[in-house]
Image (cartoon, rainbow, N blue to C red; front, side, top):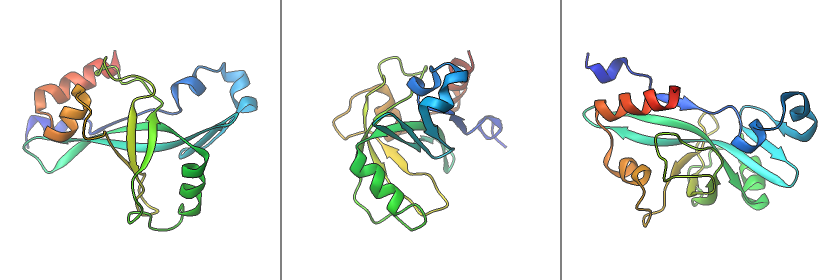
Length: 156
């Protein structure tokens, strides 16, 4: 078993950052949400996985992030919620959580959403022209040292 095998393979966010920032005693009155979906006013969010491959093993580190989407994308996801949406074309969205290990990646970073089968959250990819560290690591993967660093920064 390698050192990397013992490290956590995911980091998740309970809600989009802006919804999480609503005082707890007001949140339920202002937003509707569950583990997969969130609506706040006229804004719509889907809980997704942004995978970053782990070098040397056949697995990935999965960021469980929220993505803001247009109403049409949200409605299409609802239509496919109990169906296999993996043949659907990728849909546009914007990151709704800040990822501490990636200071250059902020709220609103553009992503592409690929719906999956009903048992899996949609998967995210960063657009081809994105030159950010997150996009590079999603393309090239991360080693055990970077994996540890991501966990340490996220937990701080």
